[in-house]
Amino acid sequence: MKFNNPTGSIVAMITPFHEDGSVNFDVLTELLERQIAAGTDGILTLGTTGEYPTMSHEEDASVVAHTVKVVNGRVPVIVGSGSNCTATQIEKSVEYQDMGADALLLIAPYYNKANPQGMVRHFADTADRVKIPCLLYNVPGRTGCSIPVSVVEQLSRHPQICGIKEASGDMYYAMKIARCVGPDFALYSGNDDITLPLMSIGGSGVISVFANVMPGMCHQIVADYAGGNQARALENQLKYLELMNGLFMEVNPIPVKSAMNMMGLNAGPMRLPLCEMSGEHQKALRAMLEEAGLL
Image (cartoon, rainbow, N blue to C red; front, side, top):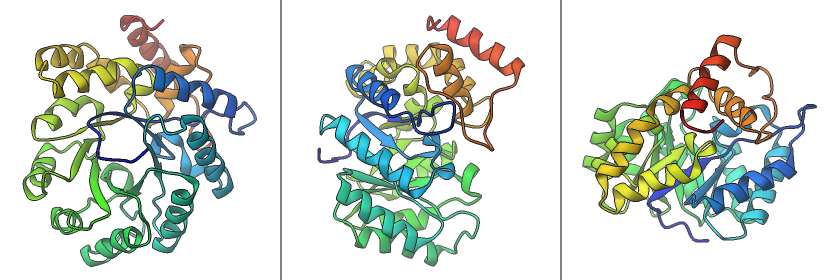
């Protein structure tokens, strides 16, 4: 399916594992079908929530192939192909494009970082090598660096770079992005708790962790706001705000996989160095799920 900057809820999928740590493809199929049945507007695989840093390249490719096959064009599939090595990012991007990805998510270079010129080249050189849309991914809490507004503005003019997942939580930064890019450049919230504030400045929706738990509600919040029912959208955003924030009480995706396991969705364990939640946090998360009517 062609990626045309859809307005809506794009789920940042978890990767389910067996107890031995291998990818559980049967559960992955079930979770993908659950998302589509609930009305999710897009699937992101191999994002932060998908634990790609602990997976081998072969595992990454197998998850992409399986996801593309199961989704079968019903909604767009976005694949995280980013790397702190530009050459590796290009290699993965071309491979995932050829496997059927509809768009790519490119993270800012981390650890070795880059100056603004290097960051432009990191993204632009990758976009030059593919024929599908690319989304920038700004998540300074993970990467230790933010994509400068001037870099986003410059890259927004690249024909293959169609938008940004903005996960800094900084509304002033987001507003500066909204001010300097054109109407065809999509702005997606990477933080569930500020989906509506971001949409109020022209955002297209959310790339969501919360949608793993409540895909239908996440879709409805965005659809209501975009469709003119801002009052109901706000009511539901506030109703589930505590749970949205609770899914980040420990590093993502520990809480969301824990929540899904409590709900019987068989997300399985995390891979080290991520491990099970503390008992205190498990108790708090269970209470939030009960309050939301999910247990």
